[in-house]
Structure formats: C-alpha cells, structure tokens
Image (cartoon, rainbow, N blue to C red; front, side, top):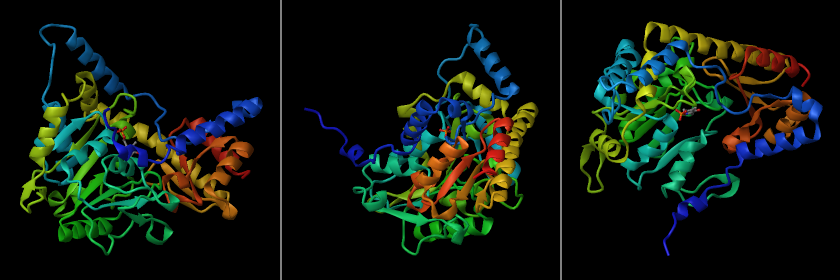
Length: 410
Ligand SMILES: *Cc1c(COP(=O)(O)O)cnc(C)c1O
C-alpha cells in the first residue's frame, strides 16, 4: 500500500473560516429577519469589478487567440517578457531599485508562490514567522515536514514565533537567536501594520549577519499612503543579497478570481548547499518553474500588463482609493465607539482590541447577534491575535457606512 504525507496529519483543522461560516449559518437559520441585515466584513476578498483597462486587454488577448496569425501557444517559462519588463521598470527601477526582467517570475498568485518557494530551500532551515500571521506561511512549512507536532495554543514545535502587539507596533524586531528563513508581510494581513525603513534595515542587517533569507510578502504595497514607508524590501540597501519578494495583482487590481502575481528572485541572492558551498538560488527557481509549470494564461498576463498602462494605473488607484475610503470610515467609527484601533491607514484591514476583556470569539458572537456584522476573530491568526478582531475594508461604500453606523451601538 502507498504511504501518504504524514505531515498533513499534523495540520490543525482549518478552523477559522469554516467556524465563521458555521456560526453565521446557524445564526441566519434562526433569525431570518436579521439575516437580511447581515453585512460581511470577514474574509479578505475584494468586492469591486476589474478595472476597464484590464477587461479590454483580456478581451483583446482572447481575440488574438482566435486568429492563426496572432495565436499564441506555450509562452516564456517566467511569463511574458513585456509584462516582466513593465514590472521591473515601474515597480522597481522607477523607485530607484536595481531590477531586471529576468529576476521576475510571473505566477498564478502569491499564495501559491509562498508554498512553491519551499521547493528550492533546504529542509534543515530554521523558520521564523510573526504571530499573528497569514496562516499560509505556517501550514506550507508543516506540509513540507519542517515542524514538529502542534503543541498547546496551536504553536508548532520547531518554528520560531515573533510576537506582535502594540508594544512593537505589530512589527517585530529580529530575534536574538539565529534563524535561517523569516517570513515578513508588510503592509500586514491581519493587523494592517507597516514596517518603517529603520525596522526593515534592522531585518536586512540581521539576515546579512546570519546568512538568512527574508521572504517578504508585499501583496498590499499599493495601499501604502505614508511616503516614508518602503513599498518593497529591495528599497533597503543589501536586500538583493538576502530577500525574495512576493507580489500579487489580487488586492491592487482585483485579480482574486482572475489569478496572477509574481515572485522577485534577485540573481545576487545565495544560499548554502549542505556541504557548505554558497550558490545562487535563481537557477534553482528557474528550473523549478520550467520543470513544474508552463507559466500563466496568456489573456490573464495581458490583463496584468494593462495595470501598468496610464489608464490601468489610474483605474487601480481609484479602486484602492475606494477601499481606503471605506477603511477610514470604519477606523473612525471604531475609534469613535471608544475602541482601541490599529491599521487601516496603509492597509485595507482595521485591527481592533476587543472591549471589556472579551475573547475574540465572544466579540465575534456579539457583533453577529447584536450588530449583524461578520468580522474575523483575531485568535484565528495566532495566539497573539487573541483579544483582537479584524474588520476588512473590502466592501461597497454603502455597506462600510452602514457598519460604521452600527459600530456606534456596540
Ligand atoms: C491576499 C493575500 C495574498 C495574495 O494572494 P493571491 O494568491 O495572489 O490571491 C498574499 N499574501 C497575503 C498576506 C494576502 O492577504
């Protein structure tokens, strides 16, 4: 009989979103009147349609596929050259960051890239993650056998957890101990926090000192409004020797259903072989892509490319302004209700302390039953999230304003 991957059995039940769905269903079944009033500010998915420039480019690409002269089959294994060139220019070189198109790898989204990257990293690496955290970083390491079993409080043995809270502005300092790989996500999901240039500098110094690699998730960089906050880890000197960056079109251009993102793998990034030689990771990552994939759908890549046209830039800016307008309304309403509020300035998430010592789930139930609003309990993102909840600004303006009114009754 064949063996399965035992590591999957260490995973804790996908508790958070199924449990939210269960409680919401139960409530709606019992209260049909309130169910009609229900507003969901839970899951981190966009709500508004794609920018017109993206739609037009995708239509055009489909038409190209319908004619022999313009038909395209398999493309470049790293993704369309013209798309990678625009990314290198507009996302990096225009910000003063050295970058070439062959350091960009187009993918079907950055969630998958967060898992795929483990293909080219050694199993012996010591991994550090923040708490609270985007669960993908943890679970992909569990699946790859990089952890022991989960202990009390749901933390896995073998992972270094970096607690985040008001004491460090939800942006942890590097640990005293040496780790080999650290996941950082700024602007952060779920806390909405950003890391300052000085803080990122300390992380890059740490990585250089310990020959560690920073896996930097910048899925929300388009939401940064503070001109002092770096949009990319590569804005920090020497980061090209110690960091990999994940980007996505999901949150800036509404591609959560279309699927496109990219990984930036600098050619100057090295890691060690088990016999101690230092080799670049770029050839391994290239080999990984050319062996296991055939890039991303052509119309989708053309749609992503349209994000970099003048119209595309203007329209994605309007989308982000819409969501950040919601974020301001929700943040001010929560603060006005006397709550302790974080985030929502450089990110579409508002991270709120539960009042009166309620647990995250007690607050969830109260919001559901009394306000008919669905939020995400902070404890679902890690033990340091207990006592907090996340409000998502991904919604219509009308819903955001209605949730703001209801928060006044909390
Ligand atoms: C939404 C999100 C992503 C993007 O995921 P895609 O797979 O590109 O849709 C990446 N990281 C974080 C933390 C996110 O919240």
